[in-house]
Length: 463
Image (cartoon, rainbow, N blue to C red; front, side, top):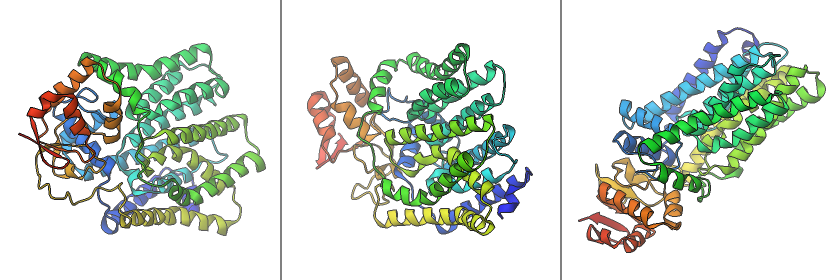
C-alpha cells in the first residue's frame, strides 16, 4: 500500500477518496457519535442569523463573522442538518488534501513527486471524528493552506509577484474572518515573508493590505447595520473570557504521540542526514515556523477540543512524508504506514468512546430534565446547551462563558439600554439560569421584572 501512493500518478487521489469514504461509512455504521456542544451552538447560531438577527449586535457569541454567515447559509439550505455539516466538512477536507499535495509537487518540495502526502493528510484528519466535520477552524484553515501555498511559491520564483503576495494577505485575512484566533498568523506571514521569502517593502505592504481588506469589509458590514459599537465592545472579550476545557490536553498527546514521533524522525532525516536545495531549506523553515505559530494559536483557543488541532495537519504531513520517503527499512516503513492509516482512526474512535462513558461535557446530553419544552424560543445561561436540541434561541446570549464576561464588565448607561432593548425585542419565552446570571440582570434592569416569573429555582418564564 505504501508503494501504491508513492507513485507520481494523480489517479492515486481516487484511492485517497475511497479511504475517506470508507472511514465515513464505518464511522456512521459502527461509531455514530452524538452531537457535540460546539456543533449544536453553531447550528443554533446559523438558525438565529438566518432569521434576520445579527452577530454581536443581537447575538453574543465568539464565532468568526464569516463562519457565522456560512452557518446561516447552511441553515437556509438544509436547516439543522448534521449530515450537511459532515458532508461539507469532508468536501473541505478533500479540497485541502488535494491542494496541499499539488503545492508540494508543483514547488519541488521533495526530491521525488509523490501522492504520499495526500493519504498521510487524510489519516491525520481522522485523529478525532469531529476534525472532518464543518467548523470555523476547518473553514479558516482551508484559507491558511491556500496562503502557505502562495508562500511556497515565493521560495521558487525569482522575481517580485504582486498577485502572489496580495493573495497571501487576502487568504490570511479571510481565514481570520472565519476563525478570529487565526489573527496570530499575521506576524507569521510578515516574518516569514521578510526573513525567508525576501519580501520587499512593496510586497510587505501588499500583503498587509490584502490581510486587512476582508476584515475591514466585515467591519463595514457591521457599521452599515448599526452594530459597530457592540462589535468593538465584544471583540476584546472574545480573547479574554474563560475557556471551555472539553477534552484534557494529555489525552491528545497520547493520541498524537505516534504521528509526532514520525514527524520528528522525518525532520531528522530531511535536516540532518540528507542534503537539500536552498528552496527546500526555505520550505522546511516555513513549515517549522508554521508549527510554532500553530502551537501558539492552539494555546489561545477558547474551545479546547480536538478540531482545534486541524491547523497542525499541513506541517505534520510534510514532516511525516519525509519519514516515509527516507526510511530505507521496508518493513518498518510499511508497518508504520498501516498503523498511521488504520491505527490512528481506531485510536481516535476509542478515545471518543472513553469520553462518552465518562459523561464528557463535550457531548450534548439527550435528556433535558423536567422542562418539557419543544419548539419554544429559549435562552440558556449554562454550559449545558442540551435544551437547544428541541428549541431555538430566543435571546441575545448564546456563548455562556463569553456572556458571563460580557455582563460582568463595566457598562455605560447606553450599553445597559442596548441589553435591555435586546431582551425586550426578543423576549425569550423561557430562560434557564442555574447560576443566577439572569436573576442579577433583572435586579440591574428592574423593568424586566414585570415580564418574567421565576416558576422554579433557576427557571424564568415569560408572563
